[in-house]
Image 1 (cartoon, helix red, strand yellow):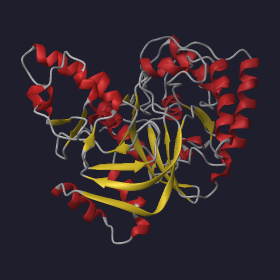
Image 2 (tube, rainbow, N blue to C red):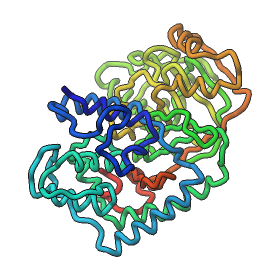
Image 3 (tube, rainbow, N blue to C red):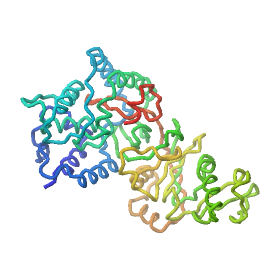
Image 4 (cartoon, one colour):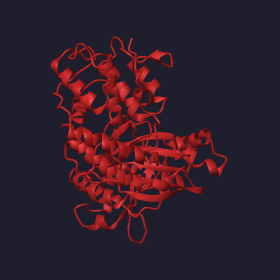
Length: 420
């Protein structure tokens, strides 16, 4: 019986890693023992399904911008300073390790996890990856933005081998970033943490919901911003932003024109001239400069990349948050794939929370609008503060130190901290 996904989903119901951070890891948690995961737990199918489930539905955990995180992160700086002064941690060999493996690399893994505080116990057989080490690996993975499978794969090895000096530099830089939001307190707000590719709805310093997100590619980064969510556009018309027109639509139009096809016809996109009149798609020569002077839009429908909902707010960079017709990417660990806007998984849940003060809204009503594709624009009675932030290293009030990829190399912590 494969019990690993069930046990880990149990953990997801509690604040992130709160149970894992406790010392009595072998004790029963909610009646299910968090111990050996049983026959078949490491099968590839089980791994893929669990990764998809965990990444798409992350546990709520603690607010990234909680004021309590400032002092906790300062304490983490002191702790990591001692680790660096002590020589850091050993490099883990690049081999896959699973529960039950006996190998010299496991002893190195043990020393690495002991140094960072993820592993509390030692064993008489240091080369055996037993349940204690497996749980420590899960703890490390979850606090480093990886799915806690307990399997030491290439991505986990890469994260383990980010130098302690790089992690210390990240912690120091993020203390300043956290302090910028010290006044948030118990306000109601939404935060997008870009390196984590996650969206949080927060109220009274508690995470109401956490959503997997898709953020900007490294060459089309999502901007930092402070704004207010003011409007919801259900089944919106998609007006292609300048970046998409320049880097996607026009190159694709030229490519398809050479093959005797028309990009506008294929994807159901309308082109408009400067006078606002709709143009015949066959009249556009994609090899000329004319396409750059036109505007483009796509009507609501199953192929509209904004899905059924766009969350609007003021932004100098013309970015927004939205649904998507393709949800497979939410089940992946690396989700930097947009042109700067934020795609939100389970956006219906976020929409219902945002509309709470408007009255008359329910999950059933939102589902009806989604299924009927009815156009509707709704102004929020009370705009909700929104923050796009870049937090790559922080500690929470339970003492767990969190790290995420330095996606856009803003920490200057080296390639290893950016690419695992």
